[in-house]
Length: 86
Image (cartoon, rainbow, N blue to C red):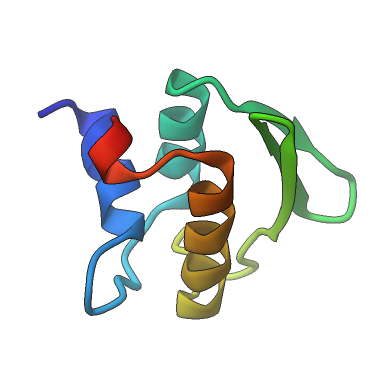
């Protein structure tokens, strides 16, 4: 299994993972065709299959919060990027 696939699968794990590094996640999303745009207000815009998600970046750590993991999971499902489709 590739490291990119493993990172995407981590978003869909049950129970929710709180150990997802946003930098590695962004690289995995880019690998699967997402366009990434960093904003000046400490957010990342993710564009995938005509869908857009704005993800706030963590201030203290590189790991994203569980709330963001849930939002990201819903975004990825709506954009058609799920572990079954990788």
